[in-house]
Structures are given as structure tokens and as C-alpha cells.
Amino acid sequence: MTVLVRYDPYDECDQFVEQVLAAGRAPRRIPIDAIRRGAAVEMSCELPGVEPDSIDVHVDGDVLAIRAERVLTAVAEDEVLELERAQGCFARDVALGADLDGAQVATHYEGGVLRITIPLVDAVAA
Image (cartoon, rainbow, N blue to C red; front, side):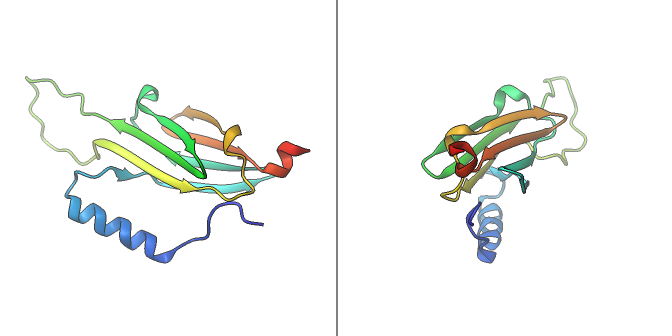
């Protein structure tokens, strides 16, 4: 049974090259853990410091798209001494397998972690 689309080892290399060539202009990739738990797949996405209003999760066909933005809160009088935390847009597209029901996606954001639950089609039909 396919839950998420198979792992492609070259995908990470492609993402790395895109980030290097974009020199910070491209959206950063959101780290994700995906676990099959019972009759659903649960995904945990790291988005620390992101305002909930800036998070967009939607399904287009068989692709789950996640977008978010973190902006620097410095004002004109501030002297920025160090910027190590990534700012700007974060994104991730996840190809869903045919056995996942993209129309029933549920989300919850707390403590900098976005949790996405996607039920299996068989579980929805039962």
C-alpha cells in the first residue's frame, strides 16, 4: 500500500542546488516527519516563530502544498547584530498517494509545529 510517494534520493540534491543557486531568494524547505498512525498519516512540520495567519495548507490534485512566512520584527531604530534564523517564505509540496484522502486534511498549529492529519481512503469509506 502506497501512503506517500516513494522516496527519490535525488530530490534532496535538487533542493540543495536550488537553494544554493537562489542565494536566499527561493522559499526554504519545511522539514517534515510523516508517520502512518492507524487509519491516517500524521505529518509534523517545523515552523518555529511563524504566525498562524501566515500558514497556508491546501491540496491541489494529488499534491499537498504548505506555505508559511516568518518576518523579522526589527524596527528602524534597531541595530541588527546577528541574523541566524531564516526569514522569509517557507514551502513544501508533498505528493500524496492514491490511498490518501486529500479532501479530508485536518491541521493544528501549536508550539511552532504544524500537525497535518490525512486519513486513508479506506478508513473514510468504512
